[in-house]
Length: 193
Image (cartoon, rainbow, N blue to C red; front, side, top):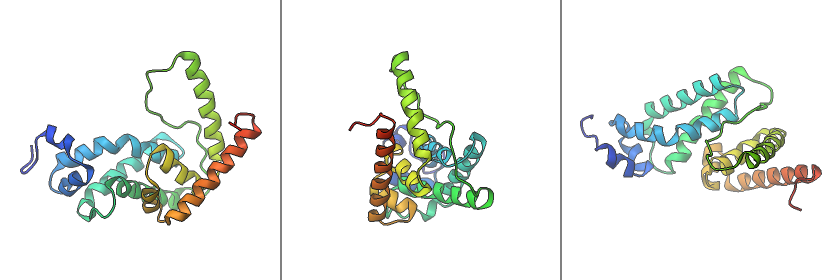
């Protein structure tokens, strides 16, 4: 345990922002944040990149930048929006250097779900495959805000902070994305109405 570090049990009980305030001097506090956000950041990065190795590298870069810049977190927003903003900027830098075309995902990493039966899982998998294909047809800005808001469960305010857009612009992009998806699902006979 590092000097000034809290016991491990106490770290789990702290809020993200409290851990972030300690992260520059307490690696255990940063490790707790890493554990909390690794899967979510990886899923977001993977949704924006072409392959697993690139996503793993960019995720590692995101956390390295978060650790190196731990003192710059001022608590003006949530830690969650701060680290997603770092991930978004890391992706943008990578994209500027390596990619000019749209990103099409064959598979999005998902958390394990031990519950559904095989037939229910097959139906859900097919529905998810169709939705992923449709989401991939959205303009990049719509795809990004849709992912952050509904899959990563950020608030509209957090999505605005991550993307550097106003809340109104985020709401407009979300509305357009949902309307486009609803039309596409209805055209395929899969919509609710």
